[in-house]
Image 1 (cartoon, helix red, strand yellow):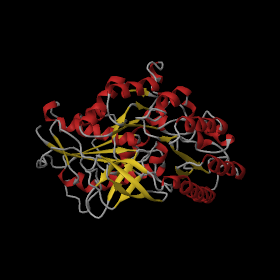
Image 2 (tube, helix red, strand yellow; image 1 turned 120 degrees about the vertical axis):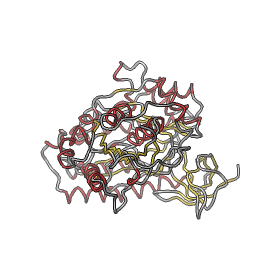
Image 3 (tube, one colour; image 1 turned 30 degrees about the horizontal axis):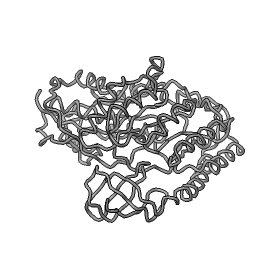
Image 4 (cartoon, helix red, strand yellow; image 1 turned 135 degrees about the vertical axis):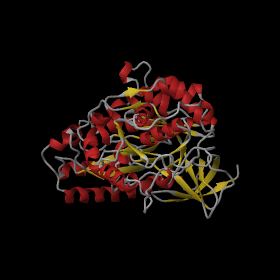
Length: 473
């Protein structure tokens, strides 16, 4: 087989995006050209998420929309696909197959793969992970691929501005206060989870924690930096427990210090942190490092110790607040974000009042907030004390209103400041740059190209974004 066209559709968290970026590079090295029109594709890969039912429903709906194409007829209505990120691809070749091969991968497969294949017989292959080597193996079972040719790999990647969630909980969608767009090289450094929170399906669909060797992480960071990226984001379901599968030698701190010592990328971010895994060494040697961005996403989930115990989170409210104090002492410019789940089984009015009180005390800069959504196969789905759906939504709306007010107050300090930022969009009626703490700044114009650093003076602060003006360097 020679050149072929492929399309990707990603649902879920930044880890899925990172996997699909790496998969696109691998397919390009084998002669693939990424397209954004399903009618042109020889191969369509759907990367899925099942953290919440809404995410699973979206994946099922998307696969169902491919039925007409899978039967050999062009789609009358286009489906949304990932925009190609690879440069130097050339024109897509003519389609070589009567119908595209459809491959579904990721978290949906371990949970609902059998149902998917019963419902959609045209799905050619599935893979229980989105890890690129396993996806390639699944593809090759139904569609021959040429061996990789390093000389054919594209020279770079197109930077895109996409709304990406900060954690698996946030990836599920729902009514929440979203963080901003992100333009960064995404690198998976750890997969799976060994914590076993009662509400979370991740351990059953992604398995226990497995870490990527430090040498590979450093190579990936240098790959992105050599192609013009000024920031990388290191990703893991529980990134602070990096190295748990090999006895923490090296551990998260040592991995981060290797990245900082062996690369020159200006900004290094990491996601997502479990409060249970925090340590003084992490605060002192990583969070306080000047090349590590000040964004810290530290999901608390609830402000009641009783609810945290039922969630099996492994820490208390008091311990969480102590870590916040230590982080703010070591990194005064930290931009603290979090996750909340409202209406968890057994949550009383008093429990919820304690969550509101925690928000008042900690004063998060931003938050993802959701009404509890039971997931089959989790321990929480079997708990008693179900909170009625209407009450979950009422509590969620109250929490969102409080957090929006506090975020507005907490972020007011940025008005009038001049900050470093990376340009995301340029040209047209406006420009957008993003601060080191992942807040977009809308500008009337910029003299810089996307991906370049600039300086911006903040003129107006709102919850979702800032407004500003570019300052000559």
